[in-house]
Image 1: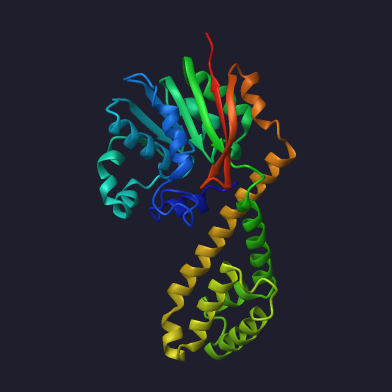
Image 2 (image 1 turned 90 degrees about the vertical axis):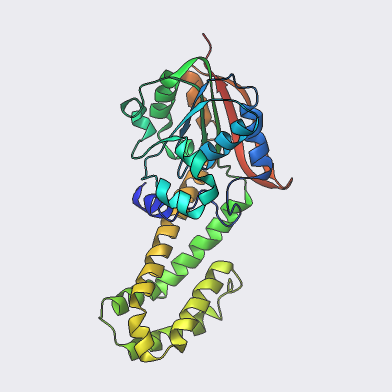
Length: 310
């Protein structure tokens, strides 16, 4: 898995990896679950958030702990480039809490010891650990926990509506690619296609889109609307639009790559339902696990809680 498309995504300032469902930060049952994890935490504890992305869980925990008056230190690491400046720009009201967290970029948890030397009382993660090499990660995390410390993470579940949605999105991306849309957009950007030739391609594509069985899907609708807007522009406007077309193309290429990462992880978990047991063989004890349902109906993940015994 390349980290570049994730770094590009986090550079937008988004906090969550599911912005359609969680526009600011994770809420509802997910937030309630994380509060149950930290409400009994001892003062002056040390928390490590691994695979933090842009720090959604770290920020959520810091806000919760501040609300209940507990002083703890939080470190958050990710293999991608963490963009604190864009976070604050997108959510200026979170500047104080963002500044209170020790963010470390370019830190693969398979090599956690190279990034952080201290030990922690609680290590957390959401939608991250399952992307990694579990055997290497389990050893690194076990070593980073204090005796009596806990590892708590929420992973994707292969039994979610999100999986079906992403599978439908991939069908659409494959269709768009097979129709040659990505290729002729790139040719137009690179000045290898005339404006009139480009408009002819747009007409054929829009006609094909209108006949597709998934024409009502939001992704295909979005592509159709954007391509139609391009078709309606006069030739001079269209020439000036090339930087925006390039940005839109790259945005979708990266979005598809991220969705494929998620799909592959879901398939991995489906094919190996006992994957989490690697953490027990590294010296941790599973004390609790279960499903989390958002708004009491959508399965948004599976939580696992481990403890490091003496």
